[in-house]
Image 1 (cartoon, chains in turn brown, yellow):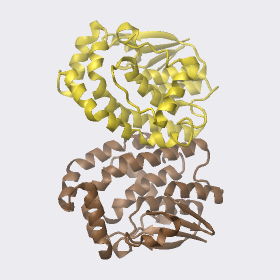
Image 2 (cartoon, helix red, strand yellow):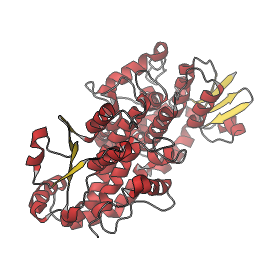
Image 3 (cartoon, one colour):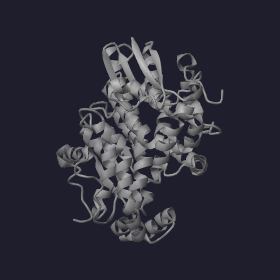
Image 4 (cartoon, rainbow over the protein chains, first blue to last red):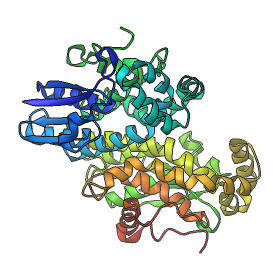
Length: 231
Length: 231
């Protein structure tokens, strides 16, 4: 039995792009799991894994932490329907993984940090205000977010150029069918999707828009059914 | 017989990162070619291809332009020693290609534009001063370059993070052996290497440094033997 520790906001919203990677990987393999929501101030729940961050997975007697390590674990433990069909696919996903973490999330975060303060569970707010306030150097989260969005959407669309070039040539980042590289970037979109207000990151004419629609449809609309703070 | 049109600076220096991709691809396949240097003001040489930029390739009766299209042509015309062993490898290379063009070259260019003015052929200087001056909004190239280097090296090293993560796990971006994804990024390094002065883009402790050394050794030291403006 697989247990997945998943970050939770107020109203049972699940924002974490890293946890989405894992949930989509589990769906890809057709594996069921027990869901264990964890708020920012409940890190004792994952202390057993010596981790400060989710996703953390308990799979039988095995513990895996960090979304990349979890993906590797899943392909090893459940070789059917591989996330990484071969070494080049794994290199591709590893590259996309680092790119999303370093170049994409850093552009999304400033544009959603204000909404994040409204969306977290009330009992987690002080913690998030402190930690994120330190990161951005101010506690005027709404003002910071407003300013970031002035130039941020354009910069974000430019940063997506590598993905755009691939998606002009093939329906998914991974090829003819979606695999882990797609789950990584899709998770980056589900993050703001679950709680950010009045933020459209893509233009309708963008090939990435159409790809995102295909991704939202996957697994019987798994991503499309994600609870949002607006509900 | 293959003819490759390759950008040339003064002293027969060959800086173009896009042309390096093609030259390394030809080396990968063990193909010989006829070299045709082209200065910035000799674009009539490639007018037959309806292109304003190099690389342009004449291969028998076929004409290919744009480094990516040339790589696809080479794998089709010469299937031995593929640049893209399978679809995931091609998706990986396509992604790295867009990433280098969009995220890497834009960070290198401001740090080398001053040296570029010194390194081009005297008869091309007016053209380059005009076109690059328009791009950066000033003709104080040395001052612009100096300022760009103050923060540029740090930003460049951060931007390399996706490649770094892959290279921590495997010797080449493409896997156990180098292929087109590696030639793309290596071409980006050969560009400043051929003419930029007093610019060290990497730290010796960086896994990317070691990878670059391996790349410099490839094909009997093909990259290491590249002529530089300092010679």
